[in-house]
Every structure is written in C-alpha cells, then in structure tokens.
Length: 386
Image: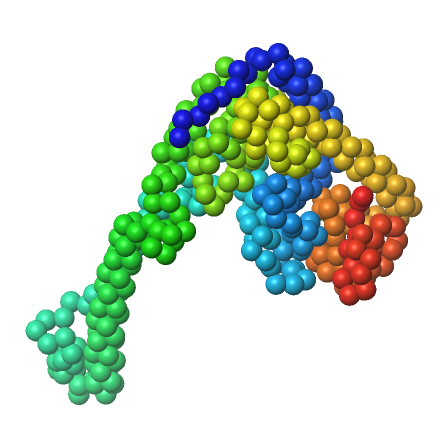
C-alpha cells in the first residue's frame, strides 16, 4: 500500500518536536552520568516489553515476565507472555548489536527469525563408507581367513566388521530418506500460504516487499530531525503493517533509529511505555497529523517517565547503601542491591539463584535490606523498587 505522510514541518508539530527533542536529550545525558545506568537500562527492557503487549490490547504482568525470563515460572506461560518475552529478547539483541544493525536488511531478517534460513548451511561431511568389494558382508571375513590359525579372534573381528558395515548402510539409507522428506516439506511450505487453506492469512501479503518499501523511508527520515524521522518511520510501519505476527517490532525500531541518529545512545528507548498513555483514537486516527502529534507526545512522556524512574532508583540505591554501610566486605547484600535495581520485581527463588544462597537465606537478606513487598500474596511473594 502507498504511504501518505503528513507535512513534517506543520506548525502543529514543531512545538511537539522541540519538546520531544529536549526531553530525550535530557534523559540521555542524565542516564549517561547516573550510577544506576545499567539497572535502568535492564528494567526498561522489561517495562517496554509489557507495555508493547498493552498497546496491542493484551495484558502481561511484569512479575510474570521476570520469572519467565529467569525460567522460574510460577504458572504455565500464556501465549501473551511468550510474545512479551520475544519482545524482551529482541530489545536485548538490538541493544547489544551495532547502532544501525536493526535497520539493516540482515538485522531485520534476524529479528524476524530468518537468520537460520539465510545463513549458509553447515557443511557436514558424509559418513565414511567402507571400501568393500563384491560381497560387503563376507569381505572382512575373507580378509582374515589366512590369519585364522595365528589369531584366534579373527573370526569374531570379521563378524563385528560385517555388522558395522550393515549398520552403516542402513544409516545411510535412513539419512537419504530423511533428506528427501525434508526437501519435500520445504517445497510444500514454500508453495502453500501460512494458515490452513489460506484462511488465516492473506495470500497476497508480501512481507518482504512491504519491508523493502518501509526501508525506503529511511532516506526521507534522515532528512528530518531525529524525533520527526522516528515518527515518520513508526507511522509508516503502523500504516504498512509489514509483519503480521511481529507488528510490535515497529516500536523497537523507534529506539533503534534514535540510537542510530545519536539522539539516545545510553539505552534503547522504551517507546511503548509512553505510547500506552496515548489514547487509542489518536494513535490509530485516520488523520496523519493527529497520529504524528500522538507519537511525538509519546516520546516526551517516555522521557519524563524515564527521568522519574532514575529518581526512584537513585533514592532506592541511596537508602539501601546506607543499610549496608557497616557490613562485612564479603556480605551478599551488595549483590542483592544490584539485582533489585536491575529487575522490576524479585522473588525469593530469583534472589537465591543470583546471590547464591538458600531460599531461607534470601528471605533474610530481603528483610535486612528493607525492600518493599509488591505482591502481598502468601504463596508467591515479590519485592521491588516502586
């Protein structure tokens, strides 16, 4: 579909753009000098992943996401929780990569899960076959007949070699059959649309072509200020919908693009945390100017929420450091502080695994540190910084 963009320099957008630019610059500068920079960045991954599902109309609890990421689920993971964890892993992968990687063809292919399909297959040498003449089963036995008198075990060794040769031929035949089946399945998958009889997905929906069209907007976005360029890319993604099952990837591209432009370099912007505060009617409006205004406001809100989060973490770290001022040098409390500042919520099991103590010892450490309990449940308790 053809994308119709708004006038990026419309008088209505200029004040919103200036506000977003200033707020993001302030957040980036403060994060760069903050003592809890690493914890703020890691917590942002969790909050943004949960907010991405909220924007899509699904509810995922942050505490469930933390436990699922640690492979310590309190209950069976839901489909929504699995998607939120995919968002979390994608954010981490984007952050650990080079700034422009996520916007490249290779980066988008990897984030879509196509890295294994595009990578060159590993060359596996074929099984080494025995060179057996005429009668494969009897040749090893004949080879040792002359030595039968001098070696009493020759017959047994010949029988073992013959059994190995038969087993190798069976394995080779099985590998060939497996390869043929895999090739037929791959061809069938390539020919047939996803979904049963094409009822679930549109057969004419060409994701590769839509992604190429979206990437062509990068040159136009580079001609604009960073926030306006990010708004252009996100609006184009929202209108084109290049990926049906990973529509949430568009919000991650906002943070990746701002990082590429050097606007936000200390962390990957948690754009969804601000976007979820904007009314759905504005985010999905038919008027492009209304949508752009909503996206710029979301960037400003994201920056304001980030500054408040830094204040919260700074105050919490100061209070916890005061509690362990006179502790011994080998105390486990500093490790617990590091964990609490890097997770929205922690459980006794998570503390025990990270710090290396027993669950009973984890409860004692939490009590000594004075962390606020957030769940209020009897069977499942969690603590964190509010």
